[in-house]
Image (cartoon, rainbow, N blue to C red; front, side, top):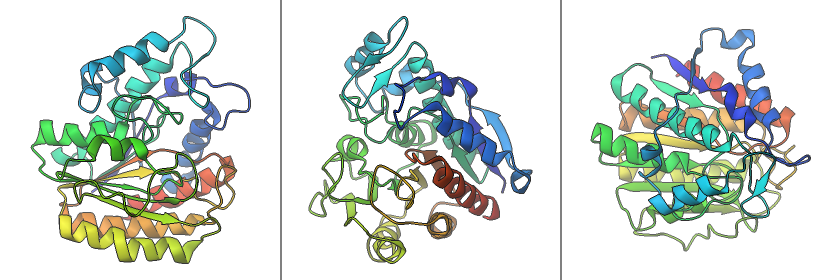
Length: 308
């Protein structure tokens, strides 16, 4: 089955202050990387704009209203110290949601075996009622709810290997046993959540890694915690919150992964999807702030998706 890739140029018009790590160049580098010859057979599509109602799969109307009210007519506006919006930010966020839900539709319809969505703003820090950590809407959570409501999926697994804990995804699914959330992340680090003892309704699996950890610790976390949890849960769909800021070059953390670690993690999740989820796997870009590390990691990740 083929791999699809969704992105949209307008997602580069979500602007942030000079020097901000979550910047439009991140998306440019991803697109440029995937334009190279090794990815000639990657099917490229424009992310569709989601209806605002899609946001309500994972957030209340009050949250959507707060984000809309924060969008400035010109210039930049701050939601918090880290999270900035500009005039096109709402449209960019709805395109990120639209790409995520279209990817879910693709793997359930059989139009694609797996899908990678590169959009911004990212999503995994957005809590049910709070935008934070560069994130406005929780794309992975919305995609999971979309799979349940549109396609009748009973069990969704979200595997988050971003170096920062996805507090937003954990918050949204804290007491929902129909969604498994597994996270490897550096601890201590922003946002401060993600301890092993945080288990929700038995559906939260946190594998915190100490600063300085590398490939061995990351793979051990997968082998001993994440992969066994997937086996027990037997999801109908696997969603990856694919942050690449655990790469050793990244300036925002102290985990020392290489691009081949993301190749490996993608491979083992594809194997689980083939065995448990009829091959259905969707990957959504989260973090990754060193452009060279991001490029190498995305190339490894998508290259493995295309091999199946």
